[in-house]
Image (cartoon, rainbow, N blue to C red; front, side, top):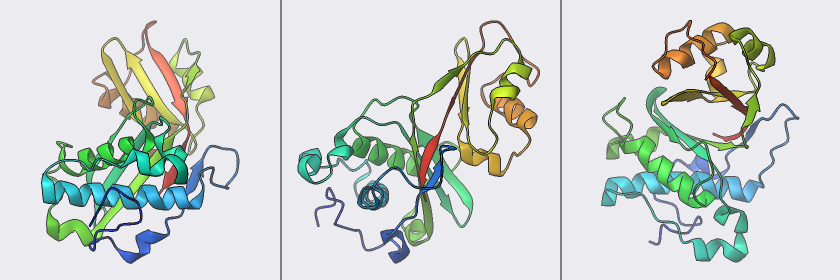
Length: 219
């Protein structure tokens, strides 16, 4: 079986993954921006890359030439995150904040990395494959926030909509918009993200950089 093409599905992929539903976190309405056939292809590709990791010990390499005419959007650079859960337990969440690879490559790479390289879990095993929940976030370009204080940041941040990137020196961390579901308070959201970056919750400096972004989600 040639797993490089989105129409070829590993047999372990749950049937209800054939028609993923996208959720917009753009703050501009509920209609997905990405065509349904592209969302389906990405969902299948993510699962295929995880199974390829089980079978071959590496990420699946998508056939980009095969997409040039049928789905050219898959060869355009796009930043993505892939989150994998098993029975609601986090297996891994890995992604890129800037578009450094073609979309298909980025999803395949991040799906493998989330499944096998996130230090928070021992990784996916073959018995887990039928029960995986793989969630893809397509990132829109970040927007720089002009913030002199934490209060400036809180004033501009849109709960439930914005992902957030905090940077200070060599320390950087991000929360996807989906994190609002578990941390609904904006102050706690920012403080937890600082902790993730290795900063104190009350840390602020004149070198702090803040950016927000929206995503289109493919569960």
